Image 1 (spheres, one colour):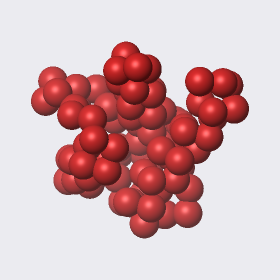
Image 2 (cartoon, rainbow, N blue to C red):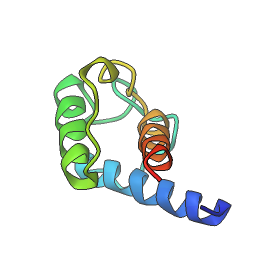
Image 3 (cartoon, rainbow, N blue to C red):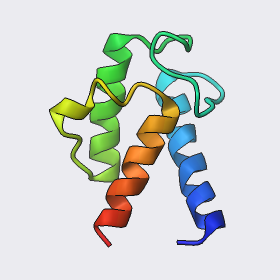
Length: 84
């Protein structure tokens, strides 16, 4: 994937996170407890919805580590790259 393709994918993931949280946008550093509406319940709901939408299973051990928009985007990008 080209650099622009990676950025497009990340921008789509960030937009999906923002939409799920009902806010206009998120940055990579935004996360649970730091972003309006992103509490522990929203975190679980977000990750479960993203699993379904993207089709990549998140191991339960990762739920506590994927607490920023950037870490979530990195996880899904790495999983997609590993599957190709």
